[in-house]
Length: 171
Length: 102
Image (cartoon, rainbow over all chains, first blue to last red; front, top):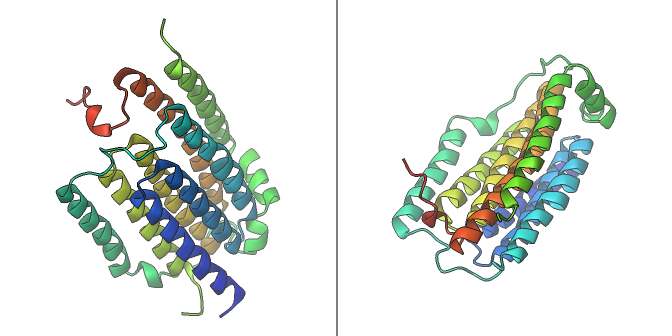
């Protein structure tokens, strides 16, 4: 096995197991910490795909900012202990499990596992190393994807104002 | 088995998405439902990056950046809503937030 293959199997296993622990664990704080583990594994998988910039952003934004927000709210609302209402009833669980397994089964049955797309994008000739670099993504953001980039900035501004308004105590 | 291809990444993405979907359906703690949604977003991101590198198109990478930004916005607003709801009801059980049911 090559290094990439070993990295893939290790990271994929940890990602799946920690994601399962997020949704199966009783303690919300433990769930948040397992979610961080899962996000780190995803960042590692991005590196194996040569998307170094996105891996860094994943760690900074997800594992850094969003997870701190989650932990902060858990602590603020004093929800760190398991709650009596946490899990849905058995019928819901069975239906959800059937749907989840059915989803994966349908995709794998449709041949996702053997899927091999041909390189035909606008940058098809560029090696993946260069494609995932900060320079390439930055150039794309400030040229062909400038409008979506500005829209994203606007979304963040609106979300910030909205969060402040929503969390404000009424008097 | 030893060669890792696009299919492996896509299968992993499908599995993670299913785990997130099952979490959304089975958990009643609003914060854990949010975490399950983040797992689903990440699964989609993995598929985006996989396709971006395999077909050589930067649009997938840019899309991942936008998804991460939207996830951050969604987490901020969603958690603010949870805090506001908790002030009213003293619980984060999604089953008790049913006043807007049609």
